Image (cartoon, rainbow, N blue to C red):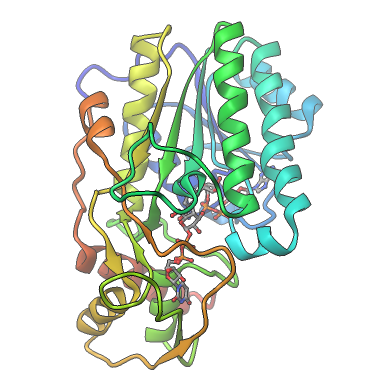
Length: 337
Ligand SMILES: NC(=O)c1ccc[n+]([C@@H]2O[C@H](COP(=O)([O-])OP(=O)(O)OC[C@H]3O[C@@H](n4cnc5c(N)ncnc54)[C@H](O)[C@@H]3O)[C@@H](O)[C@H]2O)c1
Ligand SMILES: O=c1ccn([C@@H]2O[C@H](COP(=O)(O)OP(=O)(O)O[C@H]3O[C@H](CO)[C@H](O)[C@H](O)[C@H]3O)[C@@H](O)[C@H]2O)c(=O)[nH]1
């Protein structure tokens, strides 16, 4: 950024002690923003928050603490990453997702409205599309989630749309595809305990933390029968949030719902091939049955985000994503985390 931030106040990053949020914190700080992280550390870590940011330990649904933080720190924008993120868990425990994603987001949005926060950026998901009728899937295509996780996020998108029409607040909902990789400078990465994400699991197997990788389903209607996803590097995604914030500040009457992906899909087997290549090892694969709630193929039509935001992906390379994820996994192992 040449001119520095145009925001007259701080950015609150909910979930900033988590995987994606901690990278957004880095991107914001690097761009010169002042950041306050609000996180209850349920899956995040205080050590994941860059010391240049302030950490407030609270639940986003705690109106009293959230509103006090907004006032005390002069928050003028909220990036809302906090939430529960495991698709199969949402199938077995849907009410957890409607509480911690939908109801907690409702409370946070109300706090934003009451305290007059003018800009809101929301972590939405490709899971809002369910099983798309066609891929690549575009923002205007039907949103028919096939799991409670996707529905919990779609309901939050609906609240934002209605609230932005009624109150002086604009928003960007970014529908992330599959987020992976780690800060190329090694400052953050995915540290989730008991992670369920494919690339994280594969690099855990590569560093000896797991014995093998299960391949969940080999009978999907995809070229090799395994699930196809659009993997986006977490640092590109973090940069997209900063670009979205700049746009919201520059055009306060406009809101946006944008796919965040590269527009290219890789199968589970292709991902595991990349991990084998980067690690120069052969990680054991066990072919297993399908996992509940998994669509066959999710690939973004990313033309809208490329046209709308001042954002160019810099890390759109599967091998590079795996290399960064592996470097972080090794750093975690060295620290005994
Ligand atoms: N990882 C992906 O591939 C992916 C894809 C699409 C969307 N998303 C969304 O991105 C966001 C961040 O995901 P992540 O992968 O970084 O997960 P994460 O679990 O690493 O981070 C979530 C953070 O939110 C905090 N948190 C959870 N509930 C909270 C609450 N009620 N109050 C305060 N803090 C709370 C956790 O402690 C954690 O630090 C989520 O909203 C998720 O749905 C992730
Ligand atoms: O051990 C594993 C883990 C995953 N997979 C497969 O790998 C693919 C990717 O699975 P992930 O768990 O890494 O990611 P998901 O596609 O299930 O979900 C992720 O991306 C979604 C959007 O695409 C949601 O936003 C969600 O938050 C996020 O977890 C799927 O085909 C899955 O079946 C395996 O074969 N073995």
